[in-house]
Length: 425
Image (tube, rainbow, N blue to C red; front, side):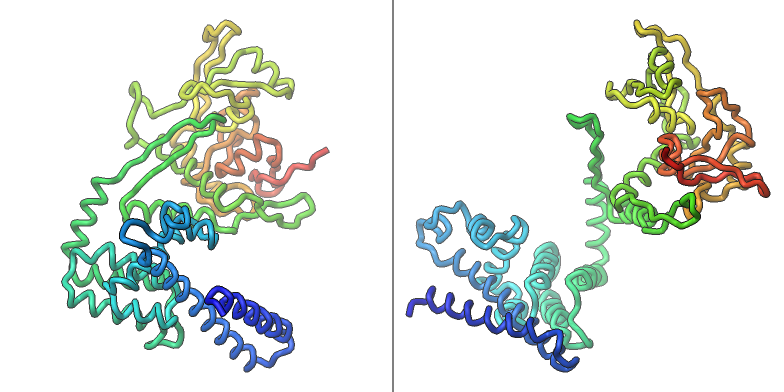
């Protein structure tokens, strides 16, 4: 019997055993379920060990002039694993690295654990990646201790259960940091030099951002985005039943990022342009203003990117001073350019923050410092910039009000405003 035939037969027999185990699992006792779990875990680890050894064989069993992958018409072992095993590129590259580890034994304790199937491939990949990143900065004796310790924690030798890949990563980084604090300072300086941020306009007019931040600054930004993406905000439906906010986590993060930028742009410490805080100019032809007043679709144009946007969107962001609107005639001549009388003054904002310490939407806990002052009667419709015509709304709910998905109602007892879901007719 050939090796390939033996593997195929073993696969078929294993499939039959698994089918029987899965069929019986619902009726098993708790003890039998634990036994099945342990057996499945051991099998999965052995399977991953075989894949790592297979990557080793593929990488190192070719001739002096060619590799196995190239003999099989693939450009590399990683490419072969992508196409034949279905790995993503990162996963294929990681298995190739494990194969090289099994061949060269840089971390011997980890290599033995991989072959024995006592650590998962993900655990091994994390350990190898962290060791590779730091090995040139530390002596062999320390790396040997780290090798033994990492495998012990991965296998769960000193605890009730094996450590997750994430816990291993954090612990290994901690070991290296404590052992050589000077290296941490050097890495911090390198990160500071590598920091960058860019923004560009996509073909559809949306703006894409990309940033690389230092560990400290990045953690602060991530903390803010995570806190504002928590599934906590709810709306009040007309019937009084709370309705879950339907935004995705990434949409909440995007809204939080915009809120942070617009808030920062209005602070006294912000960079200025022409002596004023950075302000986006949007031009609105007077004919489009009339369309908007008649509740018809109307367009405005953003000066920075020359993209067309709905006037309804401009009406929302114009409340908090992030945008300066220029009303033009149909030939482009500016008829009106103004902003100062529309904005709530700092003292008015302080008073609004006292009256509305959070977003004035039931269940929304966004603090006032991150909200936008909204005109109950829109400024564009003649609304006054007075306290009795103002309310604090977070960026998301402010958007919903201007889209008329929410409406403002006033409590007859407290006289305070709140946003509730509008009833579509």
